[in-house]
Length: 104
Image (cartoon, rainbow, N blue to C red):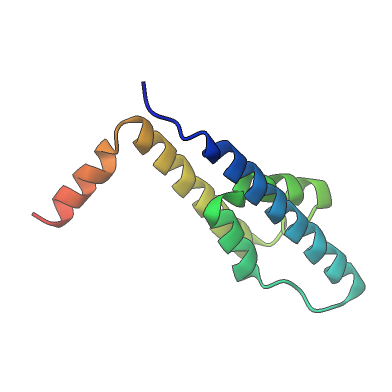
């Protein structure tokens, strides 16, 4: 059985909630014509684990869903997380092979 840190679920839930509220705040600022939260901040929050919250916020607030360049970066972050999850379940076998190929 693969060890599963019990704190991981809490971390993902917390960072997803924070990301969700950042998106909501950015949407409200956009509607009010105020200064916005930088896209790099939103992407950073997604990268550190908040991508599920970002997904919900995008669908709930219809925010950042039609900007292609933003969506490409968002889905690349999701793909990276999914790759890491699959690789973790396989004992990091894929990453080890890539590292071996790079440093032969």
